[in-house]
Image (cartoon, rainbow, N blue to C red):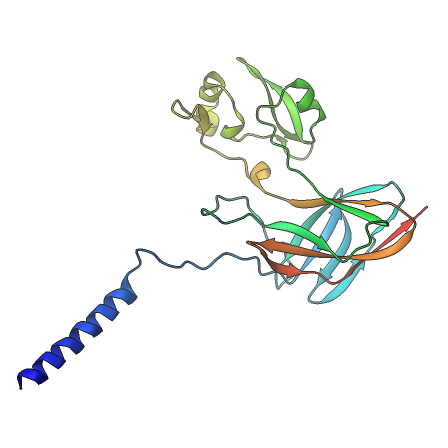
Length: 235
């Protein structure tokens, strides 16, 4: 009887430990976030140059001359063909941002270069004038480089403001607050400028037709791999 009770107690203890282990969320293995895309479009100056959807090429107008460069933005599509909003967010430690990768192309016919995003904050006069979507802004207290586009106007993000006085000046309209510990203006973030676009430059090098493959990479693996994308370069 005593041996039976010892075995029963051991069994109950083991089951209880397993239940606690299953309910313990102190170190959960959270699933990685992925873009579940069913296709994508390539745009140049808001003109659709290429569309791929559910395993088929719908549009392909990727034609250019030698020494011509197309600035292309990539917009991934969901199951219904709608654009998937790709926001720039804080990533967990060790987690990489999504990025584009190019393979299977002839680099004597075309070149493919990822666009480097320019941060207007902190740029001097000359650097600001040369940077796309940046312009010098004049406030009551200071002149500084700030985001600007013809479509949306000035970047109204509090984080675009470099000094305490201007930050306080925008406190009523945008709720900006100056963090004296980090010397940063914090508060409202303009969604028109915090939206992160994936893009690249396609340049024609010699007159011929080639293809390339585009992949959306996340933490070392591809979330999406395109069909072979045909490009024709003319003289």
